[in-house]
Image 1: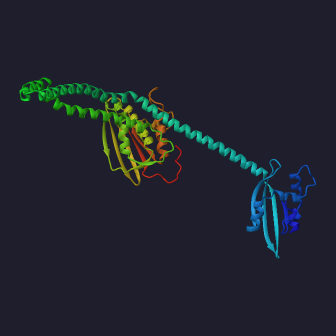
Image 2: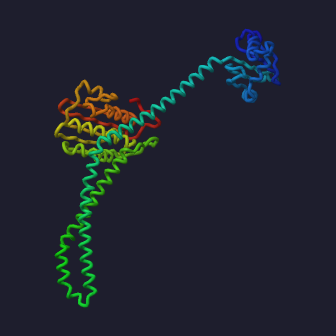
Length: 399
């Protein structure tokens, strides 16, 4: 046993039942000198000061303890293995110490690089989120004039109706004053002809027919504005850090269509074929941006007059939304690159090349896919497929 310890290249120390050193090999003597360079005659017993109290307790209870300890000597890290057992009625201990400074340095370097990568990933995730939001707001900016037109129309006739309503109220108040004067007169019945003349002059019968319609039309206009504003609010919502929730994709598609409608209505006829679609676990505001990008692209692909067909359905635990247009189609050489960032076939100023790239990233984040079929001159069909329920604690695939 002692011969084996003598030739070992790791420091080994034998202890008696009281924890006193009974034997140390040559490697222990060398290590003690390294630990105390100012005292070349340092005894191996000095190495026991490196053994933490918890090691003594663990070895006495469980029979062993293994751990790494940083020493007072800069850069020197020891791996200590402490074994203890009872033999022939007496407790004995064995402490083995190895210099693992190089390994500890590598682990520290790996940890440092891991921390740097984690920080870089966090910054990249933040930049991606900002890019997503910037592209979303840029899309709304491009549609601002159309949205303003969609809001101005109902606001315009509500304003006009309020002017008419003000005239009607004045006429009704005038009639009420006539009735009040008649009731306060000595002979109210004698005022009947005068009141009838007032009704005819103010055209009260027409007001009675027109007023309900005027109020209903104004209410419809205000509700139209409220819906557009709510759609914009839902669309521009960031939703950072919020969990995915079961959402109605048909409702999201309709609200997005409502936002882009002014850009489409003058040249596009929209057909809807909505099938049974259960709630889908997602970030609806992000999926709405996918719908917006696809609807805008479909509208821009149609030069003069055409149609866009919207369809939905579900099968095998997945929901799908199809947006098909009768536009110019996509050439074969461009079809393989349409999801590449900054790649665009549109003229300068009409496209950034980020719309489909971001749409792809959003769908990939939701563990879904985008399928594309296109024929030059005959139009394109984009099919967004999403799982009804997101995989538990799964990482999104790289876009």
